[in-house]
Length: 293
Image 1 (tube, one colour):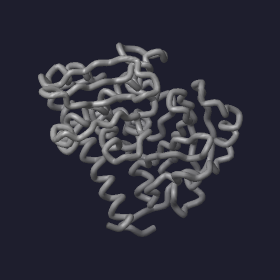
Image 2 (image 1 turned 90 degrees about the vertical axis):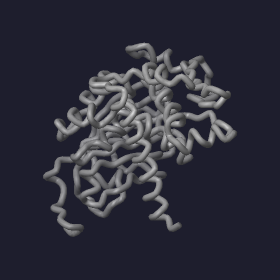
Image 3 (image 1 turned 135 degrees about the horizontal axis):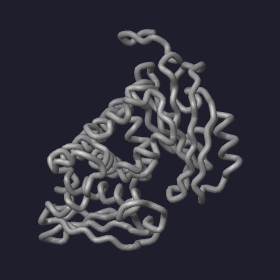
Image 4 (image 1 turned 135 degrees about the vertical axis):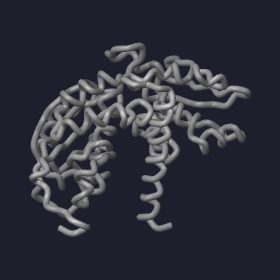
């Protein structure tokens, strides 16, 4: 399998998992946020969930202990300020482990004696099965039929708009930024950076239409304003915000070098990273028709 086909396959796996998450939310007849995860758990007689402070051992774990599945989730993040019963990170973890329960391949693996793998959630794990479970959780907590109307009413969203929407859905800024990007028809992207540079990221359809398909992963941060923010706040232990300007090619792999973007910065302590959300105006993008500029 060549590298390009492999990437397409991974994308297909993620999209399938996300759709599966949305289907569960739809079947449970949730008509407004936030999604009640424990209502979903209670609807499954073969599933039992238990939370505890597991420190830095793992965020979540699903095991088959016949005749039931045991879903364990780490409550240590509840020490952070939040509304509702659990911190959004904990809610995302529960959704992630429900992904392992509902996704057929994951469930069958455990039923057939496969060993469970304690994991770290919210786009911090590389194995494809964990990426799938993350996408399932995003679809479960932020289904398109509830979130898309918020997203595509905002051609150029701000960090405040994303934060307010995240509070409404009781999800983290991290997962809301990613999901917002995936649902947006407008040019935007979410990028995670640390002291080592760009870790991961997602781009919207607006950038994909001009062949900006991928974030520049494992590369240095090129934006001067972002560099200044990161230099001023090198410690990831405290939540901080900022805003700057840059160019799209500082963040996305493509040849267009003159697309201006607005950059919003949010340092997220519990993942020790700074999230950068970029937006561009559609007027900045070149005309694109049938694959040609």
